[in-house]
Image 1 (tube, rainbow, N blue to C red):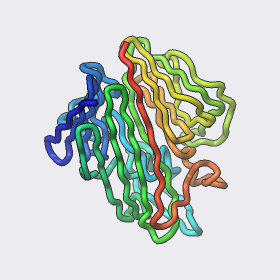
Image 2 (cartoon, rainbow, N blue to C red):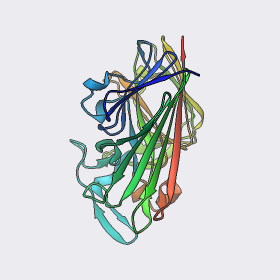
Image 3 (spheres, rainbow, N blue to C red):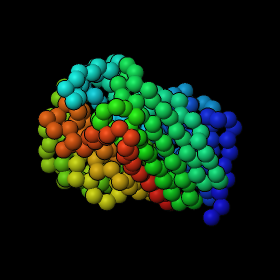
Image 4 (cartoon, helix red, strand yellow):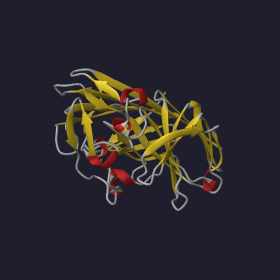
Length: 290
């Protein structure tokens, strides 16, 4: 297997394997600026020098929680905590703190990159932790792994995930085997599960912003240019298909959104991670060009 890597600085790193090119911005949330097969974007993509923030990227990490933390307040181990706003026009905190942080380049080779960040307890997340992201590129796939290690003096609530953005093209179709969908209230927080016998159809006809359970097999994405299979070690999915945008999101996550406010957060995927212990997750995107 052949490949090459290029680092224009400690913040911008590229990997090449066959026709695939991966560009990372360590300083902007450890995010993926772009993933291309030759000139075809696989994820929503821009040249790394043009990326202005993680939320405009192709994918960013969700750590130490995913989705919405309801009304920026929670109770844990008998103590009340409040987090600061991190998303305009939302009463909630969203997606953790990894996407807001500067990650450091720990190592890279022709086909692999490791990024790391260290979080000290602050107004956005009251527990200390370290996190690492591992990226491996082959001519057919991108594999990502993330590890979080607690540095808190008590067991802290932890979740992991990724937030990839896919280009919505003329014939974008989505097929996922699922069993249940979380419906949300007016504040966009999950309130109850309903049956969801899978997702299959044209993305342009969908209007989801929901979490899902019972995910089996790969999430399959296909359009006039590419065929993709997304797999993950994580058991939940968030599917976001805004009709007025030129992208859609299929997000593997470890827990139900706002699980920390549920009667039994651990039963809904949130981890109580003891001091010094780690939790890891992986995601793979297999790429075939039509």
